[in-house]
Amino acid sequence: MQEAHPNLPEFQYIKPKTLAEASEFLAAHGDEARPLLGGTDIFVRLRDGIWKDRYLVDVKGLDGTSNIAFDPSVGLVIGAAVTMNQVATFSAVKEHYPALGEAANQVAGYQLRNRATVVGNICNASPAGDTIGACILLKGSLNVHGTEGTRQEPLETFFKGPGKSALKAGDVVTSLHLPIPQKGTVGKYLKLGRNKASDLSIIGLTVVGFPDADTSSGYRMKLALASVAPIPLVVDEVEQILSDEVITEESIAKAAQAAMDACTPIDDVRASARYRKAMVKNLSQKALTEIWEKLEGKSK
Amino acid sequence: MTDHKITITVNGEIERLRVGSNLTLLKMLREELALTGTKNGCSAGECGACTVMMNGEPVNSCMVLAVECDGAEIVTVEGLADKDALAPVQEAFTHPGAVQCGFCTPGFLISSKALLERNPDPSEEEIREALVGNLCRCTGYTKIVEAVQEAAKMS
Image 1 (cartoon, rainbow over the protein chains, first blue to last red):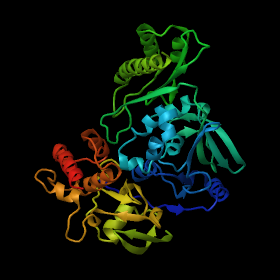
Image 2 (cartoon, one colour; image 1 turned 135 degrees about the vertical axis):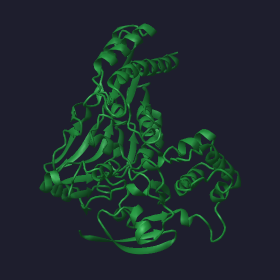
Image 3 (spheres, each protein chain N blue to C red; image 1 turned 60 degrees about the vertical axis):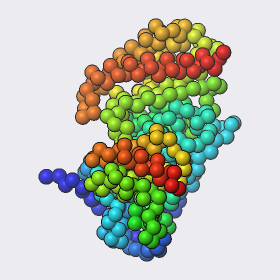
Image 4 (cartoon, chains in turn yellow, red; image 1 turned 180 degrees about the vertical axis):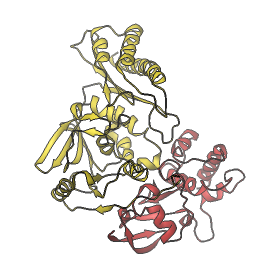
């Protein structure tokens, strides 16, 4: 019988002094080593026996991982070790990247958000990651230190499957960069979970919108979904419909239907696929309407 | 498994320990330092029974490695009272109903104290939001919320 409270299995904690040392160690130990940030997913998976890492390489505190900073000419840089609470309460996040702030604030409970990180959430590449949708829609990219130097990984092409990403052995993500959002950007994150405390999302839905003179509707609205496909899903049809058609209750309903049609959820312990699809439609309609109303209010 | 030497301040006392890589802060507090007020509930960062303060902020101690606490300052439920004088949150929780079986109480006390430090006059909604990560299976949330409101008035 499985123990109710299994201890963490044996592993070796490694605290490298430099990024070069971290990348070298991770590359040399391939599948046996994993970078450690908040550990809030890693420890659960180690305890459950899903992961069997021999080495956890603590990359908190390495160059560029500790700070969050906003520069009006560059955008927002969130260090890998910056916690969900630090992101959610950062004034520039509230002002310029509200969808990200709302998503970070809906991860588990307050004390877990003092350990969990946005970069860790991204690197796990879980289809359920709460903050991933906002980071993709806001054109985020990761600054990565690997054995061959540094590079940038745009999030649009980062996710390859559940738990699979463009990261290779030896890669350490040092920070996330979000460019300056379009003028007048508003955002919303809606999470449907079995409880508010700690559950993974049944669905997570991010909407970002801004005025755009180049579209027929005068706006551009983008929608991303969590927990309804093998990877975080951006529904391009929503953007298309709400760019080409005048935004009305009807076109929003059409966009919500497109979101429902685009997702491919599974049945699991949290919800059935059928329920997820129905909720994608309902919550899409709700979030898109709210964003539309906010945009209209702003443009008057 | 290689041991790591750490220095950690727990409830104002400096402790020097040798800890294994996989020892959690929770297990270190309970089994190395005999501070059994902090409880082991779910071991998954969900129930909040193991909540302690780390450098002034609440964390799930089952989700932190002891070795990550080198140089850190930890406050557990044992560190809330000033000798025999209970802290306001503790005093408020002694009133009927806020403590039932008591297993979740140490975690609730730490989360409540942390809330009142960052927001001395929270609304009911803010209290409920701050305590989302603490579960009470005796289902006594109403009395717990009332206790935090009372503690806010006492502080």
